[in-house]
Length: 149
Image 1: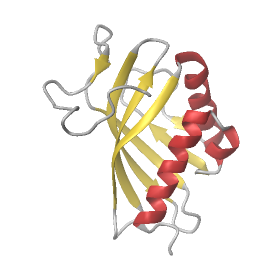
Image 2 (image 1 turned 60 degrees about the vertical axis):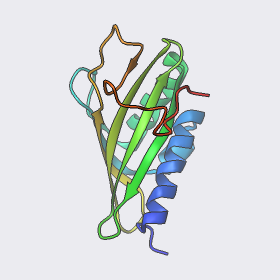
Image 3 (image 1 turned 90 degrees about the horizontal axis):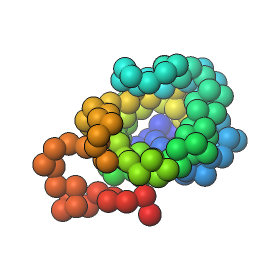
């Protein structure tokens, strides 16, 4: 099986989310090329995150300081190029809030590691909203996680 087959890319993304949730530095590092870049919408400090070490340390900070946990809602992996897109929820348990969004992944062909992530938020980060998500989208009936548990 190719390191960038749809099944391999999905497995890497799932390992990445498991490593994020566990705040496991070594497991996070194993998911990325050394020069990986994680892009974000405007409004966050110190973006984009450049390098596997930076990405790993920033997610560990989020777990330790925000109580962050992430759930994967949907994954689509290309059968023709080393790319995938997912929907996720970022649960900030210490704040009692959540943010939903999508990410586009690009993988390095030889290693199968993530070389780029482009994050897109489903809704603006409204400080008055408990969960930032699409208005009137039926998350429950579509099978989305409704809590971080």
